[in-house]
Amino acid sequence: MQKIKILNVEIDNWSKKELLDNLKSGVIFTPNVDHIIKLQRDPEFIQAYSMSDYKLCDSQIVMYASKFLGTPIKEKISGSDLLPIFCNYHKNNQEIKIFLLGAAQGVAYKAQKIINQKIGRTIVVNTYSPPFGFDKDEAECQKIVDIINNSDATVLVIGLGAPKQEKWLYKYKDSLKYIKIFMALGATIDFEAGNIKRAPKWMSEIGLEWLFRLFCEPKRLWKRYLLDDIPFFFLILKQKLNLYINKDSKDTSQTLLIDKY
Image 1 (cartoon, rainbow, N blue to C red):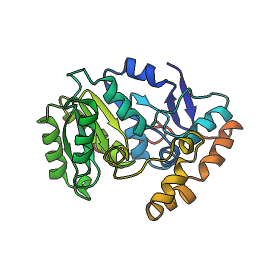
Image 2: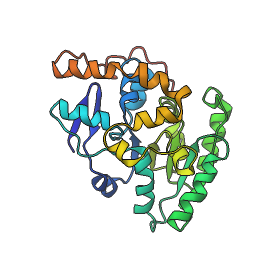
Image 3: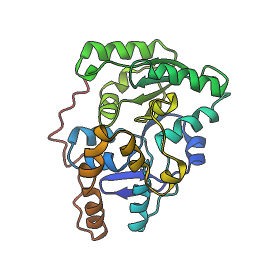
């Protein structure tokens, strides 16, 4: 499968159908502009990203960048699109049992009820919404591992926001004995529960989903979209001109802080 290099991220050039037909196991991350910018300066995030088996384009802006670089990505596969089509694809596959980890108290449970009602079976078998700061609490993290291991789930959908969700998976993935597919899907649980509105399709298709989300959550997202992510365009120009210096996991291996054990 062809991989498309966007700065220091190699994005898998799958269509939705190709992905669903081939996805049997592995770790899925969904790089967007914000992920890619964080990957320029966060060695722990780079290391966590290195464990992913599938990196799927989650941004129309990244799609435009790939075309500008002369290596177009086939299709945007955002996390908010992936979960519903994955559930529908496996609606009759009893081996697919999903655990939802993330969102505010009660939101994941609401998403579970909505998804199961749509699919017509209990495809989401359990949920957990961890307390604020849980990732700094080893006892709480071990509790989460135990809940997932006792849930009968084979698929974990984690929606804690980047880079927290990817770093948590890097540290605890090997402790999740029965999970075959790991999906780090950001706000997807909130979308499924109706807790956060999705952008209109036309806005998503032309690359303005960020503007809709900024309008809905200005206090939380203004800095991300209006300050932090702006250097992306300059860096893409540098890549086009062969001036970009790659920052991969090998370059930062001596500075990593994550302890898997």
